[in-house]
Length: 177
Image (cartoon, rainbow, N blue to C red; front, side, top):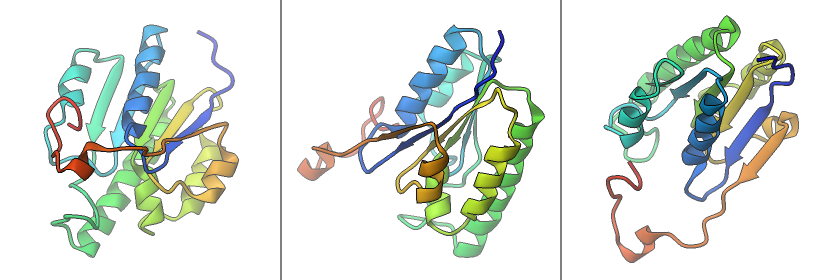
């Protein structure tokens, strides 16, 4: 397959579905014979349903949680641990992007670590310039940085209209995880 125009795609906003949209994009890509890697910057301590599903699609679609849990909200990580985890995760992500082994790489929830000041936006913009031309790169998470939005080819913002949490309904297996 001859890929020449790798896109930079952003799924952002305060609504639910950013990671799910990225996974849908990945499923479409795998169906067309592309190899996909998803690196999760925050998720890592829970047992998410998608981890089990995607194992069935290996080696064409791999998912790797790099995080140690949520940062800032309900976090058991202190600021130093969070920074060390992001540094290590970013190094791995950068190596994977530059390896040219994949057709699509999803940097799940990377927008959070940028907006929290744990990863300089300049490093991400630099990677955009260095990535293989054919590689599709997808970034998810709320609060996408203005510079990243400007550089992206496609930006979708999920807006919350209504959410079951407001009725006191907690996260459910198969829906949120």
